[in-house]
Image (cartoon, rainbow, N blue to C red; front, side, top):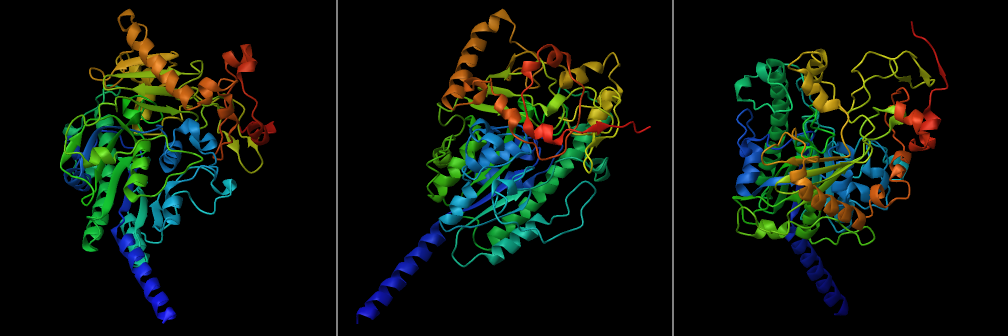
Amino acid sequence: MVRIHLALLFALTLSCVNLFAADRSNVLVAISDDQSFPHTSAYGYQAIHTPAFDRVARTGVLFNNAFTPSPGCSPMRAAFLTGRNIWEIEHAGTHASSFATKYEVYQDRLEKAGYFVGYTGKGWGPGNWKISDRSRNPAGPSFATKKSKSPGGISGNDYAANFDEFLEGRPEDQPFSFWFGCHEPHRSFEKGIGLKNGMDPSEVVVPEFLPDTPEIRSDILDYCFEIQWFDQHLGRMIDSLEKAGELDNTIVIVTSDNGMAFPRAKANVYEYGIHMPLAISWPNGAKGGRVVDDLVNLIDVTATIYDATEVQPPEKTPLSGRSLVGLLRSDKDGIVDATRDAIFSGRERHSSVRYESLGYPQRCIRTDQYLYIRNFRPERWPAGAPQKFGAGSYPKNNIILAKELGPMHEGYHDIDGSPSLSFLVENHDDAELAKYLQWAVAKRPSEELYDIQSDPACLNDLASKPDFADVKAGLSKRLNDYLTKTNDPRVSGPDGGDIWETYPRYSGLRWFPEPEWATESPERVPKMEWLDQRRPKKQVNNK
């Protein structure tokens, strides 16, 4: 009799667990690679058609003011996975470094709480997660076996088919969390693919920091075509959820990691580098059909995932974001929570583009009207030094292939190689066009201030204008207070944040001549053991 009662109790407990599991919200995070706001049709951009994003926005909430924690893919992904600012996660906060296990990621914690997790496409990276003693990519187990034919410049990963395989492998009644990291619209693009597919260059809106020429319009069309590729796979995933009867119980989050891969956008904390598209639908959890203007950071989305799934976030490394569940469940449009009146973002090293592979440290605060930027090392080139040594380094025997400096304007590798960059370089002496290259690559002051409402291209710097002295001082203090509160080494470190330069880069290196500032002030060059270990031992002439 006792055994019968125990068996019944066990069965009842198991059924309750399964019922609870079935009721728990699923999570689908879809992240495009290098897409700026407002490049979706839901935001009214005529050159592009994104029905899947628009569907999420229509059935959920469309955010007009969402911002990335960093305008680079690897640090943004680490910040998103941990829910912390880049300056709170050490090595993982810079590009192509490592990712310490003490910084827990939401996928691991959801898995421990009973979720079935996985990812397809681009997870966390580039970087070396293996050296951090992780057993897998921080985005979860990979689903990557399904392939398809794709146009040039586009991944052959059949993202949607891999999501279907993930759903098929999910244990019955187990909630899931899936990361769809699309490789598009990351460069390179197939040149002319937009025009080839009937897209209209007259519908392109060229940002003011780029010249309005046929070459630029075509390049932007190619970028738009790749966004549509991402959207097609997202649409197939949403259809699969609907067919499986899971769509209503899934919180679908669609955004991007950082801005478009064009000069003065990606890898910059200007508007086109940090302002992201964001739409979230959650039919069983929140009222849809709304547009919200609150300023939100994508690390707020991480807090939202924990909140929506009722999974406890880390205690030792607590979240820095604030859950958006209150915004999602509100019935209001426009400003829902007036306390969400500012966001913070920043960057360190992006690519290897300066003497000793030094970074370009920036932090910023963005309010509804102003963007204030602090450049901590204004003596450095923001997009990369104009000249580099020959062909760089040969990885097998660590020899520089050419000791002569290459041509001018070939070292701007914080700007992805593109027809747009080539056009600016080719026309760097043109009386009308020269300013566009300078906007992208010239050195910048230690402080910048822009009125976003009148100058979204961030071209009219107000930092030195007396009429804006009070605005600048107020934003500077607020930024400094936040960085101090969150223990950013750039404001609280004894070396002014040079610890960032000691974090190894595991991707390739380039070599650059010593700049005048380093010759005059050698103490300004941090000691980096990792770089010394990879420094070429000798030079040869490749002529």
